[in-house]
Length: 88
Image (cartoon, rainbow, N blue to C red):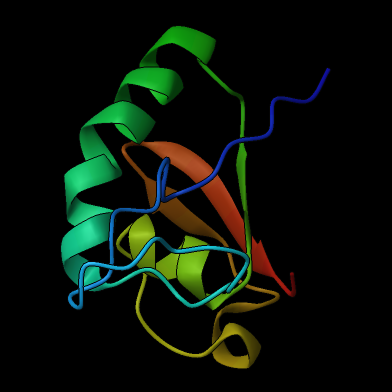
């Protein structure tokens, strides 16, 4: 079974007061931090055996630093859960 989630759960208005619309910009660090409690709650409820971070934004949101290329092929731990990183 697979459970898919996102680091950023919502798109707030831009700093200019505009709706996000269809743009797909990277979430800011502030937006990711604001959504982290939702992500950690999901992880607690689902109790996954492993996490797969798809892309740099997911890895960064889970607290992993470095490029996807440098993180790939290595085992990581997020909240005690084995975690791997790969391309989105």
